[in-house]
Length: 300
Image (cartoon, rainbow, N blue to C red; front, side, top):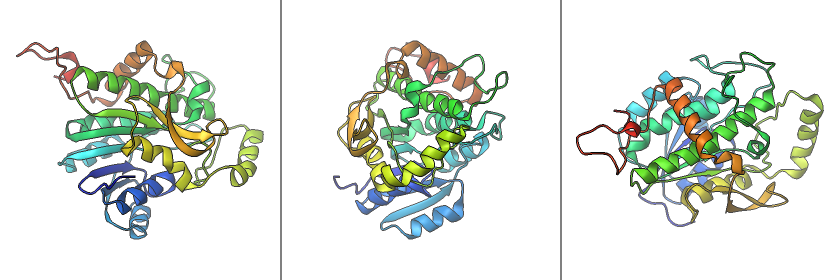
């Protein structure tokens, strides 16, 4: 990794797991790293174990009010935003704003945070997804699981697919705005980070619990794709992940998500829905905007 001195990097959920591992590596390389965490005590403990310039700031991705407060307080340039925080649950829960918890935290929270910070971001937006996106789909008729039986892993997969559709549409909008900022994504493979798999299927959860200590790599290995996407040489819109055993573990490499995770019509529709739900919009005007006239993508 090249020297990161002079860069400011914000990482959500950096109090534990791959977020913490990525933050420690970036700080050791000279970056000023802001740990954006819900649990301040956990964040402070993580920061105390790191070397370099570390700050801990509060944000709860399950609360739009908290996200707005965090963004308003961060009135400075940010080189890289890493949307890393995530949650998995075995039963239906909701955010402070009434969204299904996994979709609301993993996607909508980061969608809102990115839009609120984007006019200050200079290099990259990295969003951590999962290989679970490959078998997932977006149910636009029931995003919040109000009219069907709740399937925890189905909801998780939907949120992780949404992360990639968000990345694809964000990159399209950045390109249209003439911005040099890159939107990329990463998935950690099978990582043992304390993030317990709760699919709602007892057999699958048991297999995961037994297999994780034997087959998964640790937080440092799981953080490699995030680090590659954040500061490495990767194409815009790419998905960084482990390169061995079908993407389970090993050195990180840049690849592509499943085709349905970059479908432009689905991505645009999800963006519109997410704008309405979060009341946040893409803040940059496109190059094709007529002088003196508001552009639809600007949020004006």
